[in-house]
Length: 278
Image: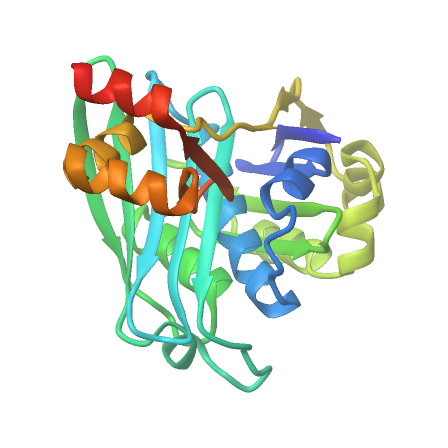
């Protein structure tokens, strides 16, 4: 499973999304050495970014970034309109279960950037933090900034990232609080194991078998990290030809770590000839 689905409570003016990714998630965190607590933060940010990108009406991407002076100094997730994802975490140590979001991230801000490739323009917004965690932060963001009451559940293991979101419909005609409370209570009975292991059909039946739920066609989610070789060639060029050739002679090759893709870009003498011939 590497998919996301929308669903609708046809009689209640409540909608939702469900995602579950296996291979794409495993590729994103492959050989990163993230602890469970760090992986949890990355999973929460990734799930939100995927759900936001799933609603994009134009070509482009959504970038969610948290950068500051805490134990985790950088969280970065990018998702394109066609649901290609990449991301990374930079941290200086383990996170304790007792650490709240302020202690984990320090003074970092949560920044969401929506890029429209058709107009080559970006819109940026700051997401106010809730010290209780990213899930609470995102629920607050939807409920306060978007005026959409929302509840979000996210679970991640080393093999799977799954999440489910329910929201009141915008401009709801009924806006029945009892209905919302009932659906929220039913959704709250889900366990992490069920969220990660059940298919979307089985999960929705398990939670809402007495409701009229319409499930829409799924969309595929794929891990894709462009190596951006040209950007790294510019780094070599900026070294200057003399320093670059001296470094190559000393080490036998020039290696630059592409942190977001967790790969190394290598340059030899032929590469330097081509770069500086430009």
